[in-house]
Amino acid sequence: MIVRNVTRGLVLGDAVRQADSFISRLKGLMFTPRLESGQGLLIRPCQAVHTHFMRFSIDVIFLDGAGRVVWVMTAMPPWRQSPFIRGAEAVLELPAHAAGTTGPGDQLELIG
Image 1: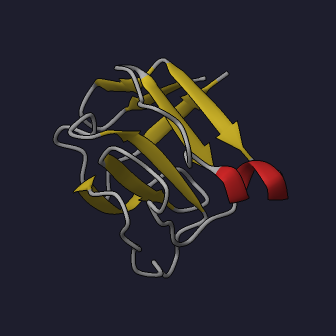
Image 2: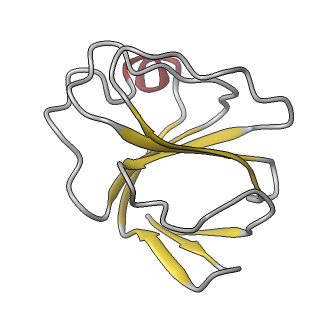
């Protein structure tokens, strides 16, 4: 799928996978060697993530049910745990620094 930040006119990813089953959410990006530019993972439902068993940093964007950004963590390193984000219903994981200027209140659009 394509993920666009409508508020800022940015394409955040054009090859974003969705993790919406128990197994796919459990696995997430663990053991993935890297994320290329344009790739990402949308985890739904989700209010907190970890980067255990990962080899690279990621940007983590927490979204409410309407696709509005609630919280952003930039370049979250491996072997960390995010806080529980109240109001989040999904999390978008992108390569480190791919979120750009995306911030709380921005509206994201998921296409495909």
